[in-house]
Amino acid sequence: MLGGSQGEIVANAMDCLIQFGEAFGAECLVDIQYCHYPAEMAIYEGSVEDLLVFAKSSPPVLVPTTTSTVCCDLQHPTVTGIPAELAKKQALVSSAYQKLGILETYTCTPQLNGFIPPFGSCISSVESSAIIYFNSVLGARTNRGGLFTRYSAITGKYPLMGYLLPRNRAGTHLVHLEEDSGFLESYLKWNIFGYLIGEKVGSEVPVIKGIHSARQEHLIGFGAGMATSGSVTLYHIEGVTPEAHSGMDSFMGKKPKESIVFDRSDFERIIQSFTTIKKEDDIDFVTLGCPHYNLEQLRYTASLLEGKKISSNRRVWICTSRMVRAMAEISGFVKTIEASGAKVIADTCPVESHMRKSTCRDYGLTVPNIRAMASDSIKMTRYVRDLIGCETALVSTERAIEIAIGDRLS
Amino acid sequence: MEIVRGRKIVRGKASGRLILYPMSFSFLGDVDMNTSQIISKEFINQNLFLKESIFLFTETKGSSGGCVVLMTLVRKKIAPAGIITIKAPDYNLTEGAILAGIPFISDVQVEFLTVAKMGDWIEMDTETGRVILKR
Image (cartoon, helix red, strand yellow):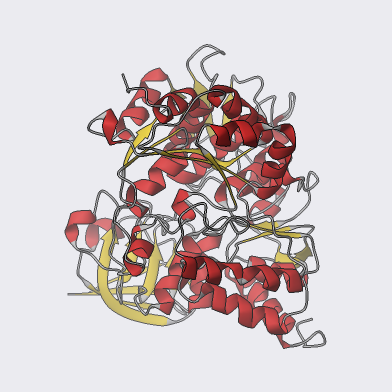
């Protein structure tokens, strides 16, 4: 491939991957089984144009490849209020991906669309919350991928380095939560727990003890939290995640660098620091679904909203992937949610949308586009603070719905 | 003149005024991609712009969208001239820096954070792994 037998584009992709591998001392390139690709977003200058040029001359991808989020709901572009010109530009990616054989999932949670790489398989992925899930919960092997995912997709290769090597998957820090087993009962608490750990360990590999089970959506929020305050790519929960089952040594014979203990006071500190609103009436936007919600979360949200009406001065987005949305339509959850006035949004989320300050300025929209947002996601509240420029309230899922329908924050 | 050494990640030479950010940095959220101004809460009042700077921070954090933000800064011609990190490099940022052709040195001694000062003139040469501080 490097010699040009499969064309200049593939040869260049191989050259980039080799350079990349050399920078990290990789011994060789290995075959990968799957790619999660950073969809080109119209809010980034030159990004869509770059894809269109690439798609014209590139061969199709060699491995199953899914796409991450874009800046609008491509099937329902008017639903988010995106300027028509920007939506039109974003829609250009669709035919380019079809030509390249890239699957149009447009989600940060491709694992909820059935992309579950086998344990031990090497993959190349973007989206920090998906990466940490693939590594930790599924035991697949990936680094924090970026723009080179394109090169991996068309060559089926990635340098053998980082978390692809078993020796780099050993735990480094021991984490213990000094609360009873029922404390982590909510999505919000798992989000915060992840954030606390990421804040402490940065880019290292935490091993969490004392937790005996966890739900899929909780682990998605947990990983997203860790990959927001830090750049954690892999964690182990003893007795829960596949590289930390009972009898296995997650530290691979090494001594933990540090033991860290958290308790409820740490959780309260995070809630306070991410709740910046002056008064409850300021909240004009409620977001659920960061990372994109799974079907059970949509069912639960529908149950909370059944028979209720969203307050007329609030916008409510419940974000998910188009595939999960389709399942929720079949199940009747979308109908219940939308009857309340809330919107089920696919392919995007507020922080990836036209509501970023920089995009609003470009299109003459109000800045900030949101005054204050309530969300059950620490990742969302962290990024909207700076990217949209709004105040935030970090609240439970249930509280977010109460706010949406007009209840006051106590 | 002070010289410290680090690990070559992306080849090239660069020079510029130092922006010293003594903590982890997320290219998504901590910088305005239209102006290159640092907008993270801790630094927002310091009127610091990454454009043409040598940007020193401890390590990357946050979203993997960071490399796309870096490429956007490059397309707008407001990217840093060079990147230096104290800790090991992040794969995501490295991909962005290779594509952008931004020289990148990692694993510089942590003491450099106390020796160097905001606005110092820095020259970096990734072939030798040298970071030269001139006052």
